[in-house]
Image 1 (cartoon, rainbow, N blue to C red):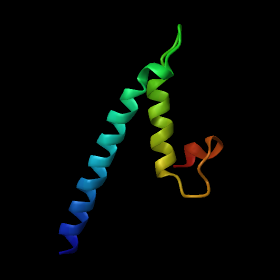
Image 2 (image 1 turned 90 degrees about the horizontal axis):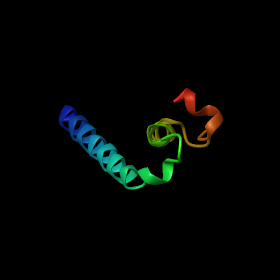
Image 3 (image 1 turned 180 degrees about the vertical axis):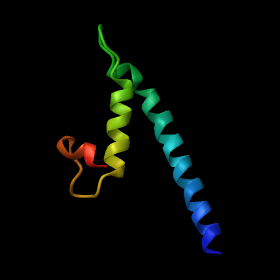
Image 4 (image 1 turned 90 degrees about the vertical axis):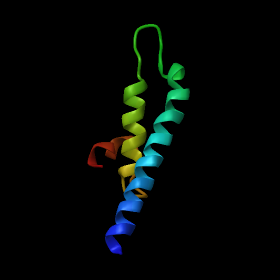
Length: 65
């Protein structure tokens, strides 16, 4: 029973990540300028924020996630 709940939770989390990735793709053009595309960096930043403990979510601590 616990294993079924765990796999269901994993499936929901993977679905949420997929949805977030699709949503971020909608804003891809806003992370570009004439010389660079910061889309992947912005995606990594957002994913890092989600992995970081509440209350510690900021750019300085992003690499701790």
